Amino acid sequence: MSSQQNKIPLTLLDSTQLSQITQAVSGLDREQLIWASGYLAGLSQSDIKAMASVNNAVAVSQEQSVLTVMYGSQTGNAKHAAISYADSVKAQGIKTNVVSMADYKPRKIKDESHLVLFVSTHGEGDAPDDAVEFHEFLASKKAPNLDKLKYAVVALGDTSYEFFCQTGKDFDARLAGLGAQPLIERLDCDVEYEQELAAWTIKINEILATVMKTSPVEKSAPIVAQPSAVAYTKQNPYIATLNQSLKITGRDSVKDIRHVEISLEDSGIVYQPGDALGVFFLNNESLVSRILTATNNQADDKVLIKDVEYQLFDALTEHLELTLSYPGFVKAYQLASNSEALAALLNDSAALRAFLAERQIVDIVEQFPEDISAQALVDALRPITPRLYSIASSQSEVEDEVHLTVAHVDYEAFGTRHQGGASGYLCTGLEEGGQVKVYTENNDNFRLPSNADTPIIMVGPGTGIAPFRAFMQQRDALEAQGKNWLFFGNPNFTQDFLYQTEWQGYLKSGLLTKISLAFSRDQAEKIYVQDRLLENGKEVYEWLESGAHFYVCGDALRMAKDVETALLKIIQTFGQKTEQEAKQYLLAIRKEKRYQKDVY
Image (cartoon, rainbow, N blue to C red):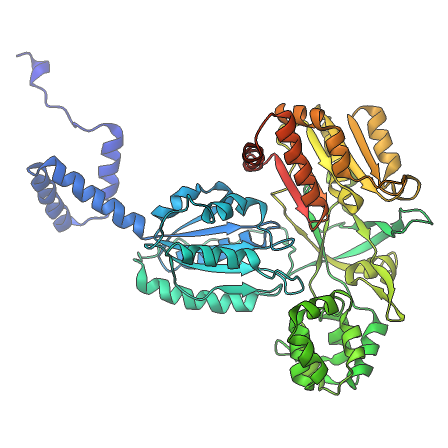
């Protein structure tokens, strides 16, 4: 043998295996290393199949110890709640995987052992876009038996809508129907849910600690705080300045739509096209006075809200919801006042919904005036909910401003003027130069394509035009080469063509490739955006086939559903597909984030 042949190799392991061994023994003391070497020597004498069996058992054990936290979110609330909850679980040493329903393969549900699901509801009890596929899968014949799954559901909703938390209720029923076992009763969250969710989190985490394996939580080195920009949120809004509130519909229009400009100067706030602006508002003082009179209370009565004392007038003006009515208020007001008439109304859910649809809080207390205490009145009301408006500007164009397109809710009812909370405040309650609390809400489910050469189709009747104005400003600034097609509708061309000069300018410059208009009252037969889509069906399908992204913004209850029905018909007709194949096509482009909706 040569001297080269006599050499013993330093290792029979490749670099990856050696790295794994090194990591595995790091931190062991001398006695532990000796034990480990003996253990490995024993394994070397064992049957390879036995070792594989051990490895498989370990893998299964590890898989079963993972908690999956899943979310379906339209505007981001369910996503934020899920991520925050997952952090609390990880802090207990439980392995956790956080995933959007949009990124989850439905068939994998059969492999899960523990699941906590966060989901919102929008429209008429509809699932959010990123939850549609999973929602439908669990209701289908393909759904597997889930008798090994333990789960919990957090449903987000708004009691002012009829189908409160319906999607969460659906998931709860479907999981249970497939044999899954609930860890805890479903939590149905109204618009202000932070305290309820915090209490629920403590309860379920105590349960999970008893049924799941935990591991020691690694303690990281303390992080030295670095100076950073202030994060303005719903809990910490920015005090901005109203620059302008300008009516952009004609004198004879049936709508009062305003273009609102707000200064964000020195705030450091950054937003993207597709995001929304949260707007806090003050209730009209005359509205507050009428409620005080109807309930026989005084402006300076002392009340508590979350253990903070206020005068009743200030509490009603600044902190409590007075324009949106909801069943919870009627129930609490009836209990406090012992009104027999309201008790009868509460026993008829259909009549109650019809009653609430026509009335604000002031209408209810004036129709059923009762002497109740100031504190009882406050306890019956829920906190003011900031209103979210699609942002109608790009910072590439407007820099330290943010623009909104606001429909002023303003009508006569029961002999008095009624206005929307935020829209009334922005349009008539706040003078230019006045202050308004705002924050931005990211909407990653409504984004321009990352490739500026990608064509887009935008469907935005009425105030749904807002984000598409931002899209065009952004594409103009980027000198994007992608084609752009707008479908816009409103009652009359002469009165209601919002931002008409701007759109005509984009059309003339070539940035806007095509515009299809639907002014419903300019002819005997009403025409809507979905009709224009069908008229242009062949070209719409060609755009989709060339990779176009399709966006819808506006009314969720009617318009968005009618547009989707038209889109499915176009795909079926010009793609020569069956109804089921058209639905699969639409589902596929939704998963590719090429079909996005911002509806309300």
